[in-house]
Length: 263
Image (cartoon, rainbow, N blue to C red; front, side, top):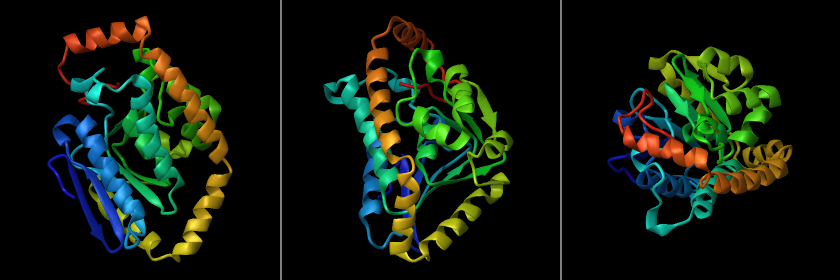
């Protein structure tokens, strides 16, 4: 399945999912989210696919929810249903038996950062920037940011990123344990594909059990924490602080440096 906003292909047993909105730094629209879910679920259930690579076309990996859809809800769905739907695909990726790799360049912000966090491994380019801006908007990360991040960087650094909204560069991200390798931008795709090809040749059953065993250390806590994120975000969507932010953001609909804003 290849559309105007998402590219997919299977190469040597690797299912490649590429965000294709480079003019908006691959900011997520409802349509792109639905296409991403379809592609990921297809690869995770396809026996010919033994590893999944998530990547972005253009200068950035993914800069979060597109500002043009800020506060919009498709088909009249409520905030609870929206957040739960986004959390579900994160859990499916986390709990799948297949290794998932994220190749990150440029901006990985908000929901884009959380997509990268849900991968089993991250190969990042030297220009990668990571950040969670939600608290500054009157919200909280709601698809694993407060749960997956502490497991990788520890609670103090996770609080620093979540509460301050600070952005960190590739060197800091690697030093903190957010990435397995840092490579030049022009080498990112080839290096990520080389890793995915190698993972795809490993014995399937052993890979599945190995991923499950490593996940077991934090699986229960992450599931419980996502439930707490869901309740907190549902409440915050009606807070005065968020509504003021949304009003201001929609008045000024020029794309920011990352081409997007959060929910």
